[in-house]
Amino acid sequence: MTEETQTPAAETDAENTLLMELKDGTVTIQLRPDIAPLHVERIKTLTRQGFYNGIVFHRVIEGFMAQGGDPTGTGTGGSELGNVPAEFTNKAKFLRGTCGMARAQSPDSANSQFFIMFQPGSFLDGQYTIWGQVTAGMDVVDKIKRGAGQSGQVQNPDRIIGMRIAADAAPAADSAAS
Image (tube, rainbow, N blue to C red; front, side, top):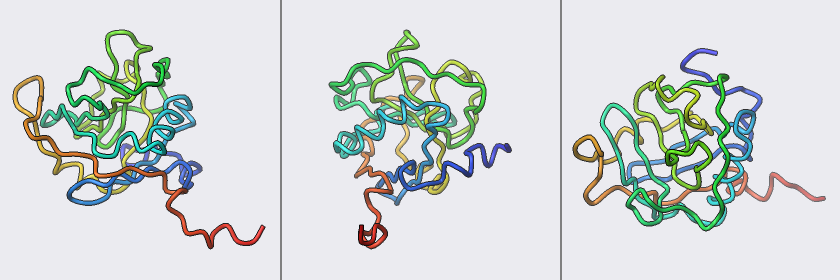
């Protein structure tokens, strides 16, 4: 697979497509249950609960990544669900547009926080779980307000307006008479 297409074509179904609405437009993320089934399930569960709607990108570092998914907006919070064990892989790399799970020092401490890479970050490979890849709307991700300093803490941060699974947004006509 090339850097441009590290998402398998077989995984381009609506159930594994995440739509993230930001102030500047929609970001389409292809989920990767083939390499991180537990993390993908967590993202889908929280998305369907509306957990991410209105959540800020609290840590955004130019040339690195945008991190969100913390309901406290501080980088210390998570969902009420338990943590998810690491699902590290060598089948995908942290490239521009790769979506990874944030975690504390313990590899098994991922919960709800995630990040989207602005640039490749090979130093993360095998250290953080990859759960998705932006397939459209990277220009929208590039417009997320940046933070200051090495911490990347953002004053008056941008918010996720809404997130949904594409299958949930599909017209009812697609599931004709049963």
